[in-house]
Image 1 (cartoon, rainbow, N blue to C red):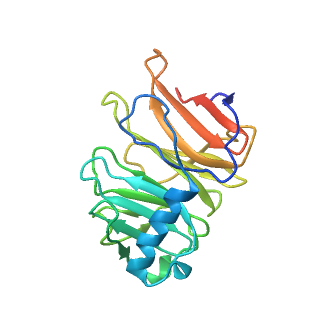
Image 2: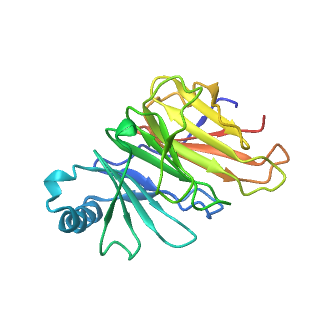
Image 3: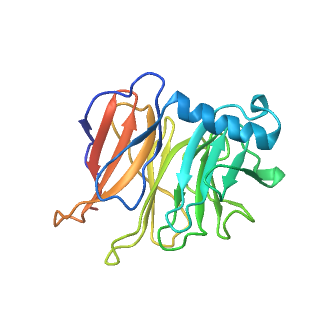
Length: 224
């Protein structure tokens, strides 16, 4: 993938990129402001007993098929099927227990397939909507996965799953393969907070990968 180009200004203090709806055709980052995070933590606290046990939020995902809301926190995953009114903890096997659930990606054609990037366990995957989990990290250069993205909307191309590994660069899986391959170093700013794959008709594959960093948004084509 060609070198990423910078787009836009840096992220504002106190704002974390949390969600980009995958059905959108252009980059529309939705930032989690402090008040929104506080409301989510309050709701989570009512479910878990206290917000002190939850820590801070790292990642949000809304499933476009059934509007299920997923949240990744410092120690746990939570899921809500009623717009955040109540939350259920998602059980992770002890041998896959992670610290910091950093990012989500959902297969656009198989909504029960969900990928989670973690701080110390690489990528976890569920194929049954969260009932069971497996490690999905073969080929990664490290286990600190800060961002994930998936593209699978063009039936003429194989699905592409991306992972940003801290200090190791950008990795990718094509189609139904199960081993990551390194793509490149990614943007010049290594502090990547979020990734999004966007289909833009160009005659060169049509996929651009956007990376949100602490110094702005970078874009690079993935046409090879």
